Image 1 (cartoon, rainbow, N blue to C red):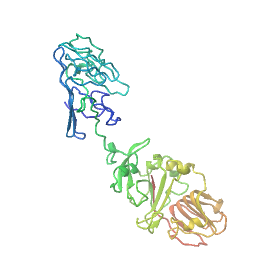
Image 2 (cartoon, rainbow, N blue to C red; image 1 turned 60 degrees about the vertical axis):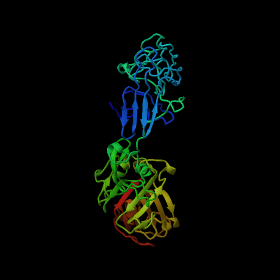
Image 3 (cartoon, one colour; image 1 turned 30 degrees about the horizontal axis):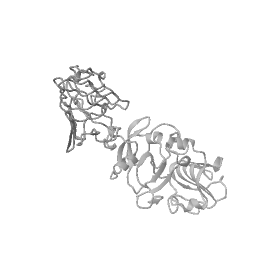
Length: 439
């Protein structure tokens, strides 16, 4: 009978533990034969002894093209005494001890030796032990007596009536052979059962991954399909789409979507023109943020070869602390400036691009909220401009999540650039599409 070769499905609970390295997971002979195509490992239990003094046959394990076999009775069985072998319900001699139990003495002159105690260690690896046949599901057997026909110990469960309970030994007959199930492949993100923790994890494990929809195991909501940019030209790739907007006002500065745990069109997991907000915005904790403006000139912080204007900020929140975009735009202080004065207009995210500028007050950052009344300039991620040296009569607005005024004209844009007067550089002066990503 075959079983899946893992600790969750293996019928003898606790015998194998995938958390152990190959040098720490001791393969034991078992009653059944266990095989998986993935690991190509076969484990076969030895037969129990049938008469006093008969150590029984040894088990074997086959992994790929190499076969290891247990001795009938000439090798030391783990911590047990010499001799002995299979300690099933047949008349095995002493030998392999429980991992934390005492080994029995060898039988001699045709008489059965005392069986090893059926010890199970705290790390759930069993090694020998008289009568422990149903590894982990039955009660470990107690030590037998020298004349016990059972060859040491009481059966641990119904399956202990047959089969040996040897350890495996190397070619020198001295040390157990240690094996472990093949490590499972990292999650591919190609199905809900293969959901990965992030796009970056998928890309790290599968560097040839291409842009598209992947399953990501988001905190709170679980496996979720998310559009991911894997193209390494986007500052290494591994970006997950969190929000996108058409040319409109859905995500203006005062929109509830910025600071509310909600979604909009969450099944629109593509880069088509439209408005959407995803749970990746609400629940994924990242350190890097990126924006694409797909309907304007290519360029920005990631260069000209990507077919869109781009912005990106590494360590966007609190000096690199991982957080959600929901928390970032809710709790980042107003007027968190990242650049000021000449550094704004020389920045790759502005220079020669779709956003206009003025020559006095120049600021770029998050949660921009400069000025008051009809002079207020607001942007969730963007600019504050004025031709004077202080805010208050701002004449140009631009960025993502834009609100407030340009001079006395109200502004409301999901993303864009708007001019009233007095520019030093003219951008597109219109609404724009945008896509926002987290990593």
